[in-house]
Image (cartoon, rainbow, N blue to C red; front, top):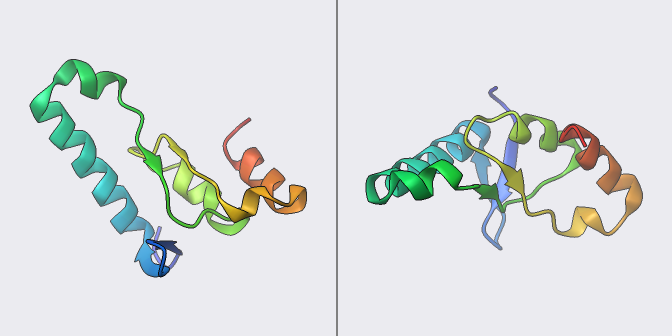
Length: 88
């Protein structure tokens, strides 16, 4: 999935969906090198900007197990599409 961007860090540094997946995969890989038992149960959450227009793409990434939703959770009209994109 190219062209979709999200923000990471408090300064909203733009990152691609591919970069999100790459970093999450590296976290999982690093953890597996230390303890496969821990890695098997590890849930890696995305903590960048999660909005209705990028949530479904983020939740489909193989190494993203969830998201920490910030400001978008304050308005039901913004938050409901995010919840729906997670299959909840």
